[in-house]
Length: 339
Image 1 (tube, rainbow, N blue to C red):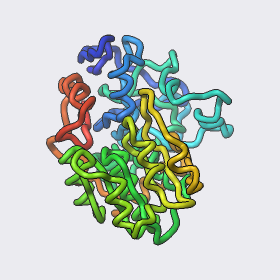
Image 2: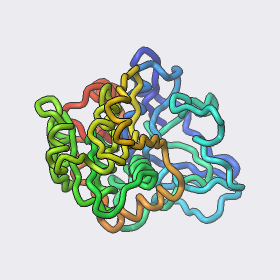
Image 3: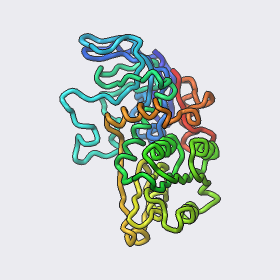
């Protein structure tokens, strides 16, 4: 099969590798779409990868073959590559170690192949069936949408609250939609990239601004009557956005860290502790978050159209260029590889 293989030094090459065969209790998945995640880009950018790895953990497709002992699935079933419940109630990876860190995620030395390939083998318990009403190009967002659902469910968001979202990349746009489905009354978005600002507007944000030309903290305070948003979701993970989130949250409000900054940053606690702002970290998702995501997609509360455009779907050969461009996003919203 063909796969986009990381070779080291920010270099990805498409080459022929052996097609995996499903073992006992496994299925072989033919990948139709695989999304490029910000965490993939960070690992590419900062060299947090070993050579020979195929990245990609957001994918949708169909079952191509069944391994021995697999029941409940049929060849041709449409699936997303996660969200299932492990047998025996195995703990989620984020709780499997008391000193687990986000940097460790995805570096299991036994894992070589990810979604930027034509096929992948999965344990049969791992995928979820894609609902009939959810197209494959929407289903590819199931994993990042589950992250957004998890963040909103971890937050203190209540019906009628005002929300600020810093960063309108895929996670930010999905968080925006999940917040609206959860009852947010007002959604304010800060995003420097024009294409992503347009997507946020199309998806129903009440105000979208460019933080390079306007002070997001001052404007969001103005839009909330001088109080500040009830909940601020940092979906940018850029230098300074954590402090900005804490600065703008209202008294007793909350800042939720969703996206990760991989570089040193600074915060000034004296600016926000007096308002007793709550800081909540959130990471990854749980199986129920995947199921909720597919449900929201199926009933139209989460739309993929403004995010996954025809121009944003690229062949495997475009993977290297896409990763390079996503280090500093411009016209891209969600880039999807179609092996």
